[in-house]
Amino acid sequence: MKELREIAGMFRMDGEIKEIKPLGNGLINDTYKVITSGESPDYVLQRINNAIFKDVDLLQSNIEAVTAHIRRKLVEAGEKDIDRKVLTFVPAEGSGRTYVEQDGKFWRLSVFIDNADTFESVTPEYSEYAGEAFGDFEAKLADIDVELGETIPDFHNMELRLRQLVEAVSKDAAGRLHKEGRMELESILADIDANAEDMCLAEQLHRQGRLPKRICHCDTKVNNMMFDKDGSILCVIDLDTVMPSYVFSDFGDFLRTAANPVAEDSPETEKVDFDMEIFKAFSRGYIRGTKSFLTPLERQCLPYAACLFPFMQAVRFFTDYINGDTYYRTDYPEHNLVRTRNQMKLFHSALEKVPQMAEWISSLS
Ligand code: GN1
Ligand code: MG
Image 1 (cartoon, rainbow, N blue to C red):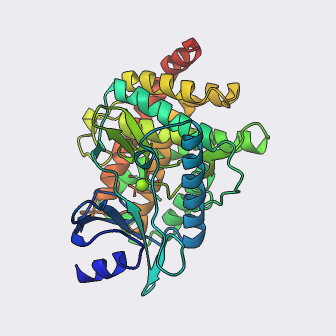
Image 2: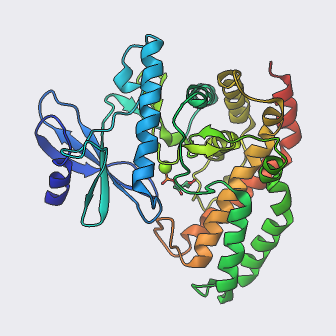
């Protein structure tokens, strides 16, 4: 991969490159591990998907501000091992910015955190740590004095996601609504429609001035946390979507992935079930991590957030399916439909458990 070596070489990195190989399984950016020889750290090289993140400069400005702010807080708190607790983006030769452009493609390089793991699923115990860590991430960023932009405007705006679905249906660009199996697609649409208004509660509350936007991570999937070998949390990664949003984003999106016993694209929908043990543990950690700022209304709406995210993700996958798979990486033609079925099942399972969730939340101190 000669081209990748050249790109990595455009950054102020240490050491000789030994090997570059693909890393992780994100759906948006292309990620590689840059292995160096000797004592130098390894690195993560990423091509930023600028079809999705249209303003790369804004994106990297946000990330630079967020990592600098967190680093400062860690130093102030006298933490040790700071380079493993916050990501370090490497400046480019020349510009000093943390990205380079090459033939219309955008790249960035960060230091690889050694001896750390990411997981695709977690136990209740790890969920509690994760809840506290994501809560703490938001708490640390509550007093950032740089105004962060929305890297994807209205990213978690449910009303917008529904409008995008309506638009996709009216265009039917891939002709999928007219193919065999159309009945199923219509019943999914009816199911979405029946729940749409309730799921737009966040936007309604925001318009009433009752729900603030705060700096959130906005992609709190289980695999976006790094754990140390002893099981403690090192840091959260994948900072592309750190931006102002409702706290529901971070709460709901974590549970969407962690409380589902199978992967979001598993065709075994009969196994999809919202796991209350994960919910209980995660919410206990999250409420602890956010006690410095969470309002009673935000707290009361957490069960709604747990339903909102599978629902929103179903709407997004389904929209992409109807559009002909233009957004998410897919491995086979029905991939986005399989994901939609899975997420709708999770949504309904969570919805049934709202009373239990509410009871648990009010029992926490
Ligand atoms: C995308 O690339 P990845 O897997 O980190 C998406 C998230 C979705 C997720 C679904 C910018 O994240 O919002 O929840 O796929 N990110 C963007 O797996 O759209
Ligand atoms: Mg991501």
